[in-house]
Length: 586
Image (cartoon, rainbow, N blue to C red; front, side):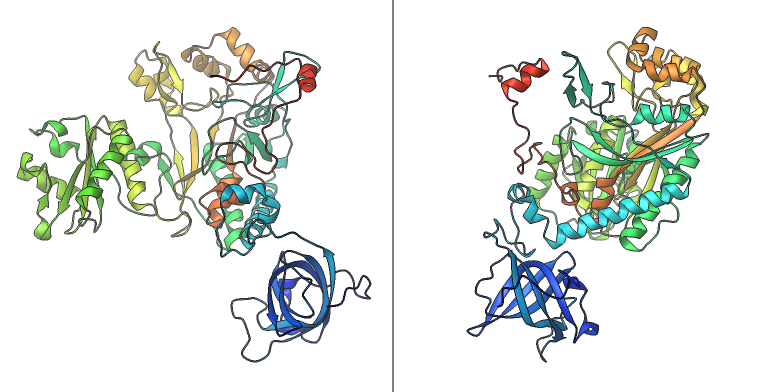
């Protein structure tokens, strides 16, 4: 090995993974990290040099000083590998770099875990040393895919005459549904900014300002419990358009999603089907249904309209068919029953379909022949199937069976392609509070469905809960990507909604004054949408957890093992901000 600090060649002439047989005979200069090193005789070694494009084998004379993850520069000649040594699993497997001169640019301690993908590493260790983890092929691939997706989305929005506008990060705290992250104002002790949960109010102000079509890849922050598809801070495509209907917005976003999918996979999304919220709940027990597999919820209430079996004397009875699962053991069925109870069921009835169509079940003796045949016919049961039934209030039945369906049948996140779906006609209200006032299912600025406006004048709680909204969600493979709605721009409708929610004019002015004041000066009809970039990229990359497509994520506990955040502030900083901390709770 030669240690040289000068060469006629540039620092780097080529990327490791881009060399091919077409480069044989060329003198090249490569830079990267030492991957694997294999000794060949007393002096000769094969060094796999790695950069962001991949690996190339370098034949180095005297490589004893090279260690894993050393940063080096290699200058040598590209040549064919000897016969019988070609590596078909490597893009550069036909060639190697010989006659090598090596310059050590930076030495490295042994890494805390192998960069090689073949060895699993604890996630906390990966995040604590994320700068090493980012060198892995998986992270390189995911982050570059994310960059392509972002670029494609920007192009798609600009093709549709949307203008990118940045909204502020330090805002007033507004009721958005989740907890705000707050920032103390040093110049105004006792007062706080909030970090935006979304740019919702500002993008509506853009519409009042005549921007017409706004978009932003917006950073949003919400202080809520973390899980596989949720982080404290996330990026979303945020869009709003004036003089636009729900159909217009769905077309805008479909174009952007198709561009993202094409950038990631080469495929396009020509059209995204629609399904109402009610149909999704009835068929799949979820407002974000995974439609890649069957096991749909089947209505059985009428089958038991005159039943003598007390467990099925309920407002709703539904069932699902698990194909070919009749060999499920009793212990497994007991565990499944416990799972159903954990989801909120009072119980779970299971039935096995035997040869000849006979149904065997602990409850079969309590059911009539017409009921048993009605179950088999409705569920299209076949020999070898397992049938699962739940009876309860309709919301509870849908919820429990929807979760069981996913538990038993959901495939990996990107198996079977990408099944996008628009969910429309959500309820405007999700329930009633103790005083009988409706609880908004979304924010207070969602326009009611035009056909349901008359129900807003009803004094019946059932009528109010029947009001649909002009809101819509985008779902893919069982993940909710994002939500949007047609906004209220009419003062009379907004006053009506505020009144129903128990918000007085004075309270509305305090909470939303700057938006309501702006509407007094001429607000165009407008509608918008936002979807999570992290979730979309994770699905396109085939990852079950969005942390795998974020460069520096938090753990599920909200901690950052890399920087040890969150950390206490020094007393001097607290004093400057006019803050004192309480002692920890016992």
